[in-house]
Length: 248
Image (cartoon, rainbow, N blue to C red; front, side, top):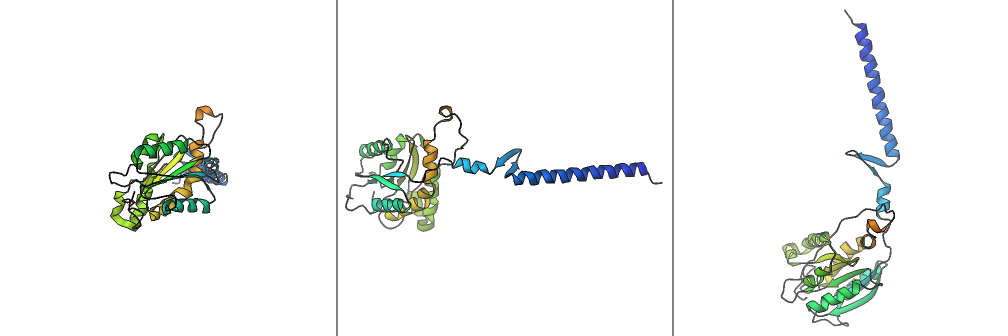
């Protein structure tokens, strides 16, 4: 014997279930139409990406420091390479310095640059190897308010593609001092080209914008978010490759 009441009840339940499914599909489509996605109960608006880059800087003023006891202003291929790459990317080099492999000179020079109004980022080249007179990292790191470990990690990974395991000898690193990103690269020209062209320049406008952003308590309303950080080198040792750091 067929229980028609039970059958009709089942049909009604199926109809409600289908209606809910269609309603959910419509809601989902509406959410996509508004550029929103639900990730674990949180809504992500595509406008967030725009807000995140709202403070990006189009043109950055660089300070360049060559650390070497054997180079001169007329013989500075790595410093020249940095200046050329920065200019080609539409940025400016407002100051260049050349100092010897001396802890106090290196620290004092970088500290002075990050306090200048016309310097928004600093790149050093040289003194990042493992010889006793390689003191750039030791001199600059105490100035940092924040470290950017991702820079060194990425730089060494890219260097390994060219120089394999020799990349472990590089101590290229980066951080933020007085609101200014500072990048310490090896002394070889090939290492400078790799670090500046493939790592620093693609992100410098964003990093400068984030580093200069006021703390939340000092700003009425700011919808931007913080991004990742970084650090790296390939070794200074002349012209053999980006990870050689022996000449610094």
